Image (cartoon, rainbow, N blue to C red):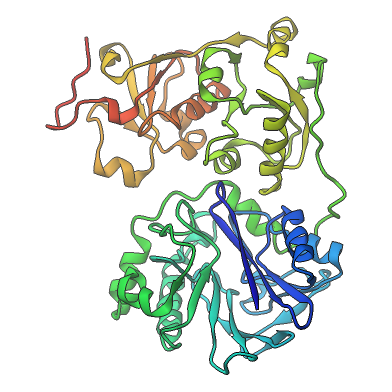
Length: 465
């Protein structure tokens, strides 16, 4: 058996190639849209991709399953569990899987368990290498069980807006986990996400675990009382990015062929940017030094790039990038494709930025200061961290609005007031400043050291007056 793990750091997403050398075949589980990585590895191992399988309708990235099956001629296998709202489009050419079904790659057998809770249609693929042992070897758990965590059951309510689903989902998840724990302790756990994913609240950094170890250490599997599990699993979950709703809707639909791809085209005519969304993907220090007023910003080299772009970049408008280099523009286009932001027209280099000022766009700078120098008496302090961060440690003079919720809470902020914007350590605040500018704010100050720059050790902030 050949098993390869592919990991996208920015999405904290794991996908897998499982191959049988004797049969010369491979199955790809939960692929994203970076299709070449799967094809290249399969070819290097002398394998043909004959099956592409999904564990569920994903929320945090646009699945590459349909495209990969189209290119390779592989059989697409998807869940047929859940109610009518969570069925794949009937026009998708796929084999539908239910509880008790199985499929094969040579001597490798994948048994299907219906494992609802995270989502109603969720299934788990349990792998047995019959050439080695009749006992199951591993479980590809999708968003059911992670290393150190379990899948959140509130996404349908929090991200997709389907009210009244969080608590029933949590109860289904509890019973699913109780059944899952009856598998042999030696079963290896290969989840779809790692640390940093918004699909859970405390995912570990290890790529793999065992069921036995997770039963000892994973808070979700250690619960034995349903009511206590429901309370814990719904508490403290991170804010789901706005684009999750888009992914849920798109991933169950049939979509266009892979041939429609954005290219990294260098732009020189400033008029091309008119009427388009401008996304500045340069490092934040360059953005703060000089940028186009109203442009959105997310540094492409940051781990949060894809998620931040998904929070703020609209799906119904063409996008123009401002990039430090062609390589960064190409990376940004690739990352944006992972969440379906395909309408990138091209990119400008920094040398093109001044030309915008003569075409109705204002080139501006944002002041960045140390935390201890901010004068709160003359303005107000905006904390854009997540709720979990805020409740642990906050400045008593701050207004708290998580970065992803700035747009829908803009009525709580006064555009004419000077606003000091801070996050935890200075990484996210420039992104938040770009969103506020996009909403029409002007008098903005970046607190470069974030909350870590304030002296809050005795619950009394010091801030120079």
